[in-house]
Amino acid sequence: MLTFLPFISTSLIVLSAILIAIGWKLIKQKKRKQHERVMIAASISALLFFIIYMSRTIFIGNVAFAGPEQLKPLYTMFLIFHIILATAGGVFGIVTLILGFRKKFSKHKKIGPWTANIWFFTAITGVAVYLLLYVIYPNNETTSLIKAILGN
Image (cartoon, rainbow, N blue to C red; front, side, top):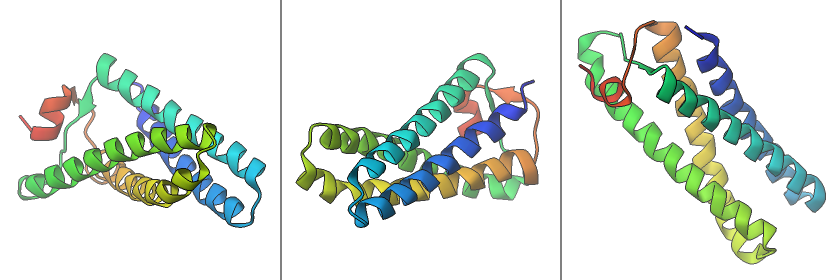
């Protein structure tokens, strides 16, 4: 059911990371207005991901890892690491945006690289989770979030 949603949401996270990299390059080139526009686009992409992910989680459920039993503990640790990164990246992202919009550029400049790097790792680990769940070990059965993370 709606099997295209994980691909779309993962693509949105990758897009947000690419836009953040472009935005970072633009600010290094002192192109502040272009930087702002690209970072807003990156934020919208990440927000769309979050809306799709949460809607899918609430209304459809999540897919549990269907790979070999001996890999489940490693996958679970990896997934928890990804969730921690994504949560930290989201919080850092909101703080970084607020600092930028409030023109507190010295703080924005300090936290921005940390935020970007956390988000890059979030995107990379998100793609890995997608590949493990939908490409390498596909599973069409959905379950609750807790069961998907911890197993049955």
